[in-house]
Image 1 (cartoon, rainbow over the protein chains, first blue to last red):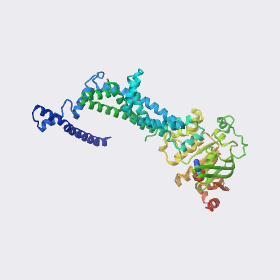
Image 2 (spheres, rainbow over the protein chains, first blue to last red; image 1 turned 60 degrees about the vertical axis):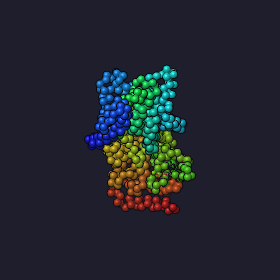
Image 3 (cartoon, each protein chain N blue to C red; image 1 turned 30 degrees about the vertical axis):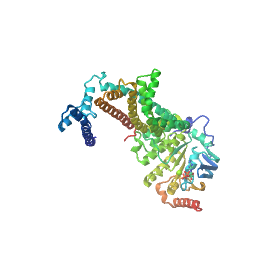
Image 4 (tube, protein in one colour; image 1 turned 60 degrees about the horizontal axis):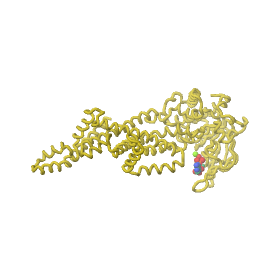
Length: 288
Length: 279
Ligand SMILES: Nc1ncnc2c1ncn2[C@@H]1O[C@H](COP(=O)(O)OP(=O)(O)O)[C@@H](O)[C@H]1O
Ligand SMILES: [Mg+2]
């Protein structure tokens, strides 16, 4: 752990440096325009100072985003519409529901694919095809169609989220369920084991390491799906809504803090699954 | 160990042995097995005739590709012969499997990494529906038999290769089948470990009076262990010689330096060479 701190800090420092440089470079034009319009000249130090504190910068400086993040998380009640925690929770609930649906669906499909040749031939191509359709194209349709039959709110977003997350689960789980070799299957045949016994005692436990890897990809995809699902809803709440509202009103600071919020959320979710993975595999004797 | 009545009690109805006590346990007559492959048919077994009696320790030896594994798998009903007759305990191999006639030991120990040693040994017992107490008792019994007491709660990766293979033998013994089919079980182990395991296997065979069919590449191993040695040769896979060992059942390791032992080993070597002569 300790040997990670140095490299991580170095990378963060580098990112911040580039970010500040880019902020100056991208925001300077506006400062100069304003000065030209007012008929005044600005010195380099004045430009530098101004690029760090514009109201609607092209690229907000890191500390502006940090301040916004602080104000919209720590200083607002979590029930407030201006709280990023509130919006994060809206997105998170859709993400978790979508992840649960996607994972359940993915696991069922994988079990079917492994046990039925017909499903292997028919489902897999469709699953692959489903992922080649851009989610941005299909998300509004799902929202509109579901809205027209009276389903709105959490569920449509969760479905888009499930749409993105079931695929890695199918792929990983199929691979995992197929990971036992012929000798291991033959051994069970010598015991006259049924297919159900083979599944529960061999295929399923053997698939868990693969499944966890897929779940990490799947939960990140779920979050993306939930955010994308918020974009066409007219956006009242959620991280996606914050992104959309921010871009309507040129609130770049708000956009960036929502982005950072989403990234932190994704990191936490993936980390949580990693934790469950470590604990589970260790208890199973699979991790050393 | 369990008495015969107790063992029979676990067997399926209608699958009880119909063989008279002195009939062959494994009986192959005119056995043929042809694999259809993309490069045409492969004659894995050609006119195999062999009777194995109860309590025999039979080794199968021959160059690779001569059908040793295929023969063992046919006995275990993992392959279906294309012609001829094969009976195990007087039943078809399939019926014999359902009556739990044999335990199979593969070259790789194949223990489940997510199960402890004891849980691995209980695997067949769980599948066959033994109750919990019986599973405990049997796992303890067979682990003692292969000298692995005290390793019940270890995971496979915590054991050496030789110990893992012993655990896999315990697993094959757990449901107390009369026949043990072993396909190069010690093939991946070094010479010293192998010697030790050979000695232990002989003791185990003596104590349990099982019938053992044992595939090996090693002439000394075959001669040291067996009451009968079946020499095979490839293309097509067939039996070229069956040697009844004159060695006593009691076999210390240094029996391998006696003239009797060397004479048998010599005959096996001759048989192997003859099988190769036409290549
Ligand atoms: N499933 C299979 N399909 C096709 N050919 C096979 C199969 N299993 C074994 N064979 C062939 O049958 C012959 C005997 O194989 P095997 O019994 O494994 O030999 P051994 O165990 O003596 O080395 C070999 O030529 C092998 O290639
Ligand atoms: Mg073989």
